[in-house]
Image (cartoon, rainbow, N blue to C red):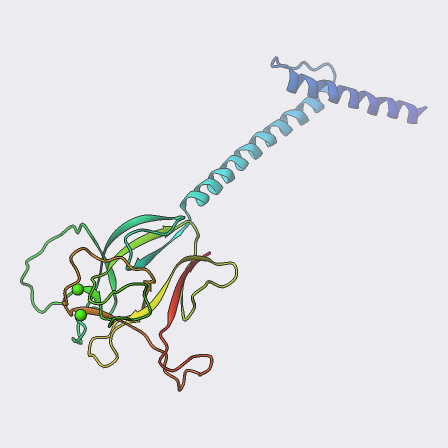
Length: 252
Ligand SMILES: [Ca+2]
Ligand SMILES: [Ca+2]
Protein backbone atom coordinates (compact mmCIF):
# COMPACT_ATOMS: atom_id res chain seq x y z
CA UNK A 1 0.00 0.00 0.00
CA UNK A 2 2.76 2.42 1.05
CA UNK A 3 4.86 1.44 -1.98
CA UNK A 4 1.95 2.11 -4.32
CA UNK A 5 1.40 5.56 -2.78
CA UNK A 6 5.10 6.36 -3.17
CA UNK A 7 5.03 5.29 -6.82
CA UNK A 8 1.95 7.45 -7.39
CA UNK A 9 3.70 10.49 -5.83
CA UNK A 10 6.77 9.99 -7.99
CA UNK A 11 4.59 9.63 -11.08
CA UNK A 12 2.69 12.78 -10.12
CA UNK A 13 5.94 14.72 -9.67
CA UNK A 14 7.20 13.59 -13.07
CA UNK A 15 3.94 14.70 -14.70
CA UNK A 16 4.09 18.05 -12.91
CA UNK A 17 7.75 18.47 -13.91
CA UNK A 18 6.88 18.03 -17.57
CA UNK A 19 3.93 20.36 -17.22
CA UNK A 20 6.12 23.10 -15.72
CA UNK A 21 8.87 22.61 -18.25
CA UNK A 22 6.22 23.14 -20.92
CA UNK A 23 5.06 26.25 -19.08
CA UNK A 24 8.56 27.70 -18.87
CA UNK A 25 9.65 26.98 -22.39
CA UNK A 26 6.38 27.28 -24.33
CA UNK A 27 4.59 30.16 -22.61
CA UNK A 28 5.72 33.58 -21.58
CA UNK A 29 3.25 34.01 -18.75
CA UNK A 30 4.23 33.29 -15.16
CA UNK A 31 3.59 29.59 -14.21
CA UNK A 32 1.28 28.97 -11.25
CA UNK A 33 1.96 26.73 -8.24
CA UNK A 34 -0.75 24.40 -6.94
CA UNK A 35 1.15 22.19 -4.44
CA UNK A 36 4.45 22.18 -2.54
CA UNK A 37 5.71 19.67 -5.12
CA UNK A 38 4.82 22.27 -7.78
CA UNK A 39 6.83 24.88 -5.94
CA UNK A 40 9.94 22.72 -5.66
CA UNK A 41 9.79 21.80 -9.33
CA UNK A 42 9.30 25.40 -10.34
CA UNK A 43 12.22 26.45 -8.14
CA UNK A 44 14.42 23.78 -9.75
CA UNK A 45 13.39 24.86 -13.26
CA UNK A 46 14.15 28.50 -12.47
CA UNK A 47 17.56 27.55 -11.09
CA UNK A 48 18.26 25.49 -14.21
CA UNK A 49 17.21 28.41 -16.37
CA UNK A 50 19.59 30.71 -14.48
CA UNK A 51 22.41 28.19 -14.90
CA UNK A 52 21.62 27.95 -18.60
CA UNK A 53 21.76 31.74 -18.95
CA UNK A 54 25.11 31.84 -17.12
CA UNK A 55 26.48 29.08 -19.33
CA UNK A 56 25.33 30.94 -22.45
CA UNK A 57 27.20 34.01 -21.22
CA UNK A 58 30.35 31.95 -20.63
CA UNK A 59 30.09 30.34 -24.08
CA UNK A 60 29.64 33.78 -25.69
CA UNK A 61 32.72 35.12 -23.87
CA UNK A 62 34.75 32.09 -24.98
CA UNK A 63 33.54 32.59 -28.56
CA UNK A 64 34.62 36.24 -28.38
CA UNK A 65 38.11 35.13 -27.27
CA UNK A 66 38.26 32.57 -30.10
CA UNK A 67 37.22 35.20 -32.65
CA UNK A 68 39.81 37.63 -31.31
CA UNK A 69 42.59 35.03 -31.43
CA UNK A 70 41.66 33.93 -34.96
CA UNK A 71 41.94 37.49 -36.28
CA UNK A 72 44.92 38.73 -34.26
CA UNK A 73 47.40 35.86 -34.41
CA UNK A 74 50.22 35.92 -36.93
CA UNK A 75 53.91 36.68 -37.25
CA UNK A 76 56.00 39.16 -39.22
CA UNK A 77 59.15 38.71 -41.28
CA UNK A 78 61.23 40.64 -43.80
CA UNK A 79 61.28 39.53 -47.40
CA UNK A 80 64.70 40.81 -48.43
CA UNK A 81 65.09 42.02 -52.01
CA UNK A 82 61.39 42.28 -52.82
CA UNK A 83 58.64 44.91 -52.78
CA UNK A 84 55.67 42.55 -52.46
CA UNK A 85 54.67 39.88 -49.98
CA UNK A 86 54.00 36.26 -50.95
CA UNK A 87 50.41 35.10 -51.45
CA UNK A 88 48.76 34.59 -48.07
CA UNK A 89 50.84 37.26 -46.32
CA UNK A 90 49.89 40.90 -46.06
CA UNK A 91 52.00 44.03 -46.44
CA UNK A 92 53.12 45.85 -43.30
CA UNK A 93 55.46 48.25 -45.10
CA UNK A 94 58.06 48.23 -47.81
CA UNK A 95 61.28 50.12 -48.17
CA UNK A 96 65.03 49.86 -48.58
CA UNK A 97 67.48 47.26 -47.31
CA UNK A 98 70.18 49.05 -45.31
CA UNK A 99 73.11 48.57 -42.95
CA UNK A 100 76.61 49.70 -42.00
CA UNK A 101 79.50 50.47 -44.37
CA UNK A 102 81.09 47.27 -45.66
CA UNK A 103 84.59 48.28 -44.55
CA UNK A 104 83.99 50.09 -41.24
CA UNK A 105 84.03 48.53 -37.79
CA UNK A 106 81.33 50.59 -36.11
CA UNK A 107 77.64 51.42 -36.45
CA UNK A 108 74.91 48.76 -36.18
CA UNK A 109 75.85 45.22 -37.08
CA UNK A 110 72.49 44.19 -38.45
CA UNK A 111 70.81 44.62 -41.80
CA UNK A 112 67.48 46.41 -41.47
CA UNK A 113 64.47 47.29 -43.63
CA UNK A 114 64.11 51.09 -43.71
CA UNK A 115 60.57 52.24 -44.60
CA UNK A 116 60.13 54.09 -47.89
CA UNK A 117 58.41 57.01 -46.11
CA UNK A 118 60.44 57.92 -43.01
CA UNK A 119 59.05 60.15 -40.27
CA UNK A 120 61.35 62.23 -38.08
CA UNK A 121 61.47 63.18 -34.43
CA UNK A 122 64.04 65.72 -33.14
CA UNK A 123 67.16 66.00 -35.31
CA UNK A 124 70.25 68.19 -35.75
CA UNK A 125 71.94 66.72 -38.83
CA UNK A 126 75.34 67.34 -37.23
CA UNK A 127 75.46 65.22 -34.03
CA UNK A 128 78.83 63.60 -33.29
CA UNK A 129 79.92 60.91 -32.48
CA UNK A 130 77.41 59.10 -34.65
CA UNK A 131 76.44 55.86 -36.33
CA UNK A 132 75.88 55.67 -40.04
CA UNK A 133 73.41 53.73 -42.15
CA UNK A 134 73.72 53.02 -45.86
CA UNK A 135 71.55 51.52 -48.55
CA UNK A 136 72.39 48.00 -49.68
CA UNK A 137 73.69 46.72 -52.96
CA UNK A 138 74.75 43.27 -54.09
CA UNK A 139 78.22 42.66 -55.45
CA UNK A 140 78.14 39.49 -57.51
CA UNK A 141 80.08 39.15 -60.71
CA UNK A 142 78.23 38.11 -63.87
CA UNK A 143 77.37 35.56 -64.93
CA UNK A 144 76.76 34.20 -61.43
CA UNK A 145 74.61 31.21 -62.25
CA UNK A 146 72.86 31.87 -58.92
CA UNK A 147 70.12 34.37 -59.69
CA UNK A 148 68.14 34.10 -62.95
CA UNK A 149 69.44 37.50 -64.11
CA UNK A 150 72.22 39.93 -63.28
CA UNK A 151 72.01 41.43 -59.79
CA UNK A 152 75.50 42.93 -59.69
CA UNK A 153 75.61 46.46 -58.20
CA UNK A 154 71.83 46.60 -57.89
CA UNK A 155 70.33 48.30 -54.82
CA UNK A 156 67.95 46.17 -52.80
CA UNK A 157 64.39 46.88 -51.66
CA UNK A 158 62.70 44.99 -48.82
CA UNK A 159 59.20 44.42 -47.56
CA UNK A 160 57.87 43.53 -44.12
CA UNK A 161 55.10 40.97 -44.34
CA UNK A 162 52.59 39.57 -41.88
CA UNK A 163 51.84 35.88 -42.13
CA UNK A 164 48.53 34.49 -40.88
CA UNK A 165 50.55 31.73 -39.28
CA UNK A 166 51.97 32.34 -35.83
CA UNK A 167 55.56 31.11 -36.18
CA UNK A 168 58.29 32.21 -38.60
CA UNK A 169 61.63 30.52 -39.14
CA UNK A 170 64.47 31.30 -41.56
CA UNK A 171 66.29 28.05 -42.31
CA UNK A 172 69.79 28.41 -43.82
CA UNK A 173 71.13 25.74 -46.16
CA UNK A 174 67.62 24.60 -47.07
CA UNK A 175 65.57 25.39 -50.17
CA UNK A 176 62.38 23.85 -48.85
CA UNK A 177 60.56 23.87 -45.53
CA UNK A 178 60.42 20.96 -43.13
CA UNK A 179 57.25 18.88 -42.99
CA UNK A 180 54.26 20.81 -41.65
CA UNK A 181 55.79 24.22 -42.45
CA UNK A 182 54.68 26.59 -45.21
CA UNK A 183 57.15 28.21 -47.64
CA UNK A 184 56.97 32.03 -47.52
CA UNK A 185 59.89 32.48 -49.91
CA UNK A 186 63.18 30.88 -50.92
CA UNK A 187 66.47 32.60 -51.52
CA UNK A 188 70.19 32.71 -50.86
CA UNK A 189 72.02 33.41 -47.66
CA UNK A 190 73.92 36.71 -47.77
CA UNK A 191 76.18 38.65 -45.39
CA UNK A 192 79.31 40.81 -45.43
CA UNK A 193 82.52 39.99 -47.29
CA UNK A 194 84.91 37.66 -45.47
CA UNK A 195 88.00 39.91 -45.36
CA UNK A 196 86.37 43.25 -44.67
CA UNK A 197 86.14 45.05 -41.34
CA UNK A 198 82.40 45.57 -41.45
CA UNK A 199 80.53 42.41 -40.57
CA UNK A 200 76.77 42.07 -40.34
CA UNK A 201 74.16 39.42 -39.77
CA UNK A 202 73.00 36.87 -42.30
CA UNK A 203 69.83 37.52 -44.23
CA UNK A 204 67.85 35.44 -46.71
CA UNK A 205 67.80 37.33 -50.03
CA UNK A 206 64.86 36.40 -52.27
CA UNK A 207 65.89 34.14 -55.16
CA UNK A 208 64.23 36.53 -57.66
CA UNK A 209 65.05 39.96 -56.26
CA UNK A 210 63.57 43.21 -57.46
CA UNK A 211 65.72 46.32 -57.63
CA UNK A 212 65.38 49.91 -56.48
CA UNK A 213 64.93 52.05 -59.61
CA UNK A 214 68.14 53.72 -60.85
CA UNK A 215 70.23 51.70 -58.38
CA UNK A 216 72.58 49.94 -60.77
CA UNK A 217 75.54 52.28 -60.07
CA UNK A 218 78.48 51.06 -57.99
CA UNK A 219 78.04 52.73 -54.60
CA UNK A 220 80.00 50.22 -52.46
CA UNK A 221 78.47 51.14 -49.11
CA UNK A 222 76.51 48.36 -47.40
CA UNK A 223 77.33 45.45 -49.67
CA UNK A 224 75.90 41.95 -49.52
CA UNK A 225 77.73 38.85 -50.68
CA UNK A 226 76.76 35.23 -51.07
CA UNK A 227 77.90 32.97 -48.23
CA UNK A 228 79.96 29.86 -49.02
CA UNK A 229 80.37 26.77 -46.84
CA UNK A 230 83.86 26.10 -45.44
CA UNK A 231 84.83 22.55 -44.45
CA UNK A 232 86.59 21.91 -41.17
CA UNK A 233 84.49 22.16 -38.06
CA UNK A 234 81.59 22.12 -40.51
CA UNK A 235 81.35 18.49 -41.71
CA UNK A 236 81.84 17.79 -45.42
CA UNK A 237 79.84 15.97 -46.51
CA UNK A 238 77.04 16.89 -46.12
CA UNK A 239 78.41 20.40 -46.73
CA UNK A 240 80.58 21.16 -49.76
CA UNK A 241 83.66 23.38 -49.75
CA UNK A 242 82.91 26.73 -51.40
CA UNK A 243 79.29 26.03 -52.22
CA UNK A 244 76.85 28.91 -51.76
CA UNK A 245 74.10 28.36 -49.22
CA UNK A 246 70.42 28.61 -50.09
CA UNK A 247 67.82 29.60 -47.51
CA UNK A 248 64.09 29.49 -47.00
CA UNK A 249 61.67 31.42 -44.80
CA UNK A 250 58.97 29.18 -43.38
CA UNK A 251 55.80 29.74 -41.38
CA UNK A 252 53.58 27.48 -39.33
CA1 LIG B 1 74.16 50.19 -56.65
CA1 LIG C 1 79.49 47.49 -55.69
